Image (cartoon, rainbow over all chains, first blue to last red; front, side, top):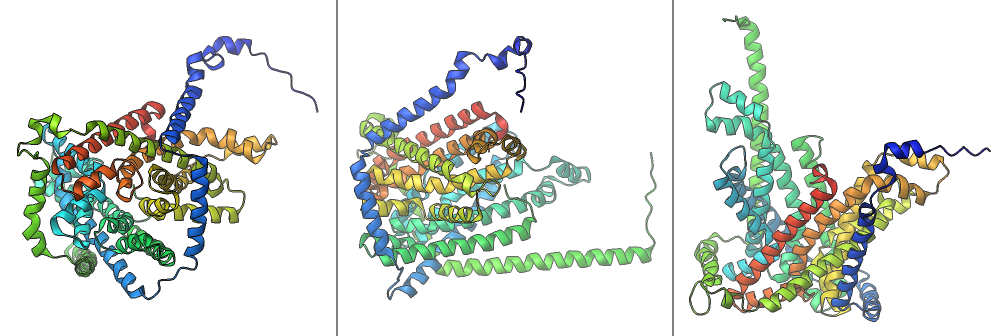
Length: 282
Length: 294
């Protein structure tokens, strides 16, 4: 096999100096960023009391816990757990639906093509942003103070925190809608309400329905955790069993959550395809 | 200019209109049935969740007045009249906030590195074998589906109270979430460069390094930054179960009814989340141009 002769690059070098001789700052930027990221990482490890001995001891403990978890066994509480799971699913469905209903009118106010004035849009958007900045668990704690312990507080918590998310997503869907159909309605003599109903809603509704279904899916996960602070559902049982170290029950509950989430995933992806056809949801 | 619009003969028109009416009626029936089914689900859910509208209406005033109370100082004055009194614990809170951000940073980075190590095995086009792919996929799914705070609850018992449990919980959850997204990016990558590199006799590792990685690294960094934003929010509640960060202070303030503290801590959290949202958004735009932003 013969070696290829090395091509003469002097001409190319002269022609494209930017490719062959990048300035030192460009070449050093990447390593410098990586070094900085690593430095912060190490500082974090030290500051957060990481130590190899703690890690090894903890992993040993974790191994024990995993051994104790097998086999998953609900004991005699299976009916109770099923009821709690039903509660969780109810919280997710109801909270998400209420949030969507409340968010729809507000999202119109936050959409650029409906309300051109910054004066209204800006405060509405910041308001939605600050609702989203607060975690569902915090809302659950607040609502527990208001309506007491129980699943109802969970519904309201999911409602409020999703309201912020939906407001933003819906308004983005509305802004992405095609202008031409609205213009068509106006050209045929429709008023502003007709424009929204016949020009905008048919475009936006499938997107919104897809998002709501997706959120029901992800809220099944959120609904499992708000129980940890006392807002009902299967999370309440899970947190209790973890605290009393009943590991077989814990693993059974985790298994139940996994199965429920997988089932909801399956159903909602079928429904989503039925509503919006075979294209991906954004 | 007048244009003649041709109108069909009555007979043809009648069949057309009939067909139109039928198809509309079918569509309406479907929509009505779907709505009815949905309402039924809602009613069942309302019973399941013990919805009690009387409680809501009786106590709704409490919800409004709660915000009134958290915006009032112990002295009875509005909080913004005396910021020094309102943010009396800013020194401590800022420290806890720093801890929260560090927890999410270390957790995100660890999770991203793990996800990076695993995702080539999980993606359809680069996985060395179907068995490896299946196992890794199920593992990632498990890590993603179990909520982070449940991991935190278990880790607090295994590793002891403190931020370490929070970091590990976030790292595991991030591995699951990012592993899936990374694998999807790899599946969308162009395979021609891989063929090119392989034709020179390179190993699997070199193929990944020189053919796949240059295509996907921008997407990876973008998703990792997005995940960092989400994890800051998540880390802010890790303290609820004793896994470090500002959540500890917040839950104490809420449970013990230190009203003005609640609003002060909430505002510090919201402002931090804002700043991090904006700066990571800026960074993503800066690094990868507008088109990779999601």
